[in-house]
Length: 107
Image (cartoon, rainbow, N blue to C red; front, top):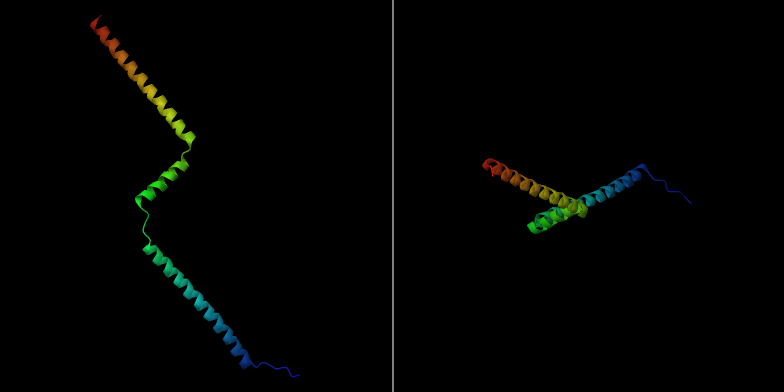
């Protein structure tokens, strides 16, 4: 049996064929990525932005996630205390004014 020796010319042709196949694969991959990018760009251009209702709901959901029920109760309790304190201060001021007027009139 004779072994077939590969000549340098055949070796060069084989390497060129492999390089050609690799380049063809890269070309196809590049074309695919360009097509995908074009499709994504087209989708972005054709997609409508979300309406105001959707964005408002998203903001409300985000707010609700940030604020827990305990925090809301604490704020309401603090506001109730502040309102009570304001009412007491107004009553005390009215009482002092009434007392001062009573002293000025000498009754």
